[in-house]
Length: 331
Image (tube, rainbow, N blue to C red; front, side, top):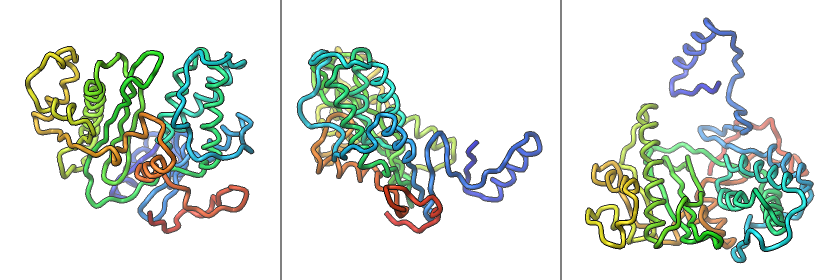
C-alpha cells in the first residue's frame, strides 16, 4: 500500500490506526511499486523501469545489440501482409506485451508500441524487425525515466493531435494526447480510432473529445484530493477547423455526421470548464503519440515530456549505484 500526504503527523497517525486493526509492516520511504523504481532527489522524484528494461532486453537476446536513436523510422510504414510470416508469433506477442508495460514510464514509446500491437494476430518478419528496432532504442535509453518536479502552480492542460488516415490497411486515424499537471506529464495515450474519419477536422475533433474527457476526470480527481486548480483546464490543438467546431453551435452539412457524443467537448467549453487553444505544429507535443518523428524533434519532445537519464551516477557497465538516493538533482 502506498500512502502519501502533505502532513507527516497525519500520515503517521493514519499508519498507527491501520496497525491497530491489521498486521502491517512499514517499509519506509517508497522505492518500488508495480515494478516501477522510485528515487527521491530533494523535493523531486524520478520514476523508471531500468531493471525491467534490462530484463526485457535479455529475454529478447538483445542485451548486447547496437543502440539506435529513435524507436521507429520516419518512412515506410508496414503493411500486415508485406512479407513472410514470422516463425514465432508467441515470441512477438510476449515482447510486445512487455513493451506495453514499459510505456508506464516511457510515454515516448507509446506510438511505436501501439503500432506494433496492431499485428499481434499474424506478425510478419518485417513486424518483428520493428520490435527489434524498438528494443535497440531501449538498449541505449534503458536508464531513462520520468522526472516529477515540484511546481509552484498546478495548472491542468493537455495537447491533442491525430494522424489522419494513418493506417493504410483501414484508413483509420491515430489519436494521441498528453496531459500535464503543473510541469509534469501525468497521462498520455496513443490509440487507433474506432471508425474512419471523413476529414482531418473530424479525426482531430474526436481526439479532442477524448482528451476533454481525460481532463474532466483529472479535474474531478484533483478536487477529491483537495488539490486546487488555479486556472480553467486548457486543451491545445493545431487544427483551426476543429477548434472552431468546439464553440460553433451550428451544425453544417459537412459536420452533421459526427456523432452527438463527440459534442461533449462543446458542452464543456460552453460551461466554462474547459478552454481550447491553438498551438503551432512545431510545438504540438502530442505529435509524438501519432506518428514517427525525425530524431531532432523526437528528442526535443522527449525532454518536454519530462523524460531524462537517471541522475544517479553509473558504477560501470551501465549499472546504476542503488545507494545514492537523496542526491540533490535539479532539472
